[in-house]
Image (tube, rainbow, N blue to C red):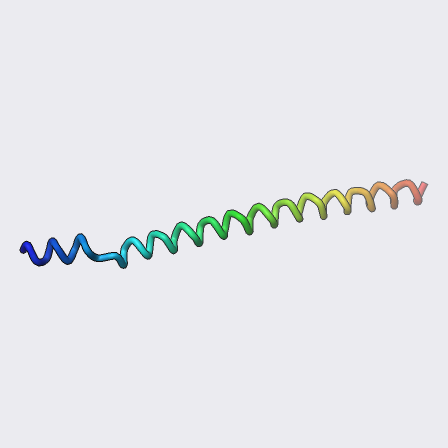
Length: 58
């Protein structure tokens, strides 16, 4: 039993999995932030084009 507990506490695979999970979550957060920022700028550009087209049709 003592040998099992010693190996269990020395095991680092679980910690590595948690670290990879944190990295994946951080990368996903960065990607989501970039996509939202690009989406807002694209929406703004389309709004400008829409208002310009509306002025031309009058």
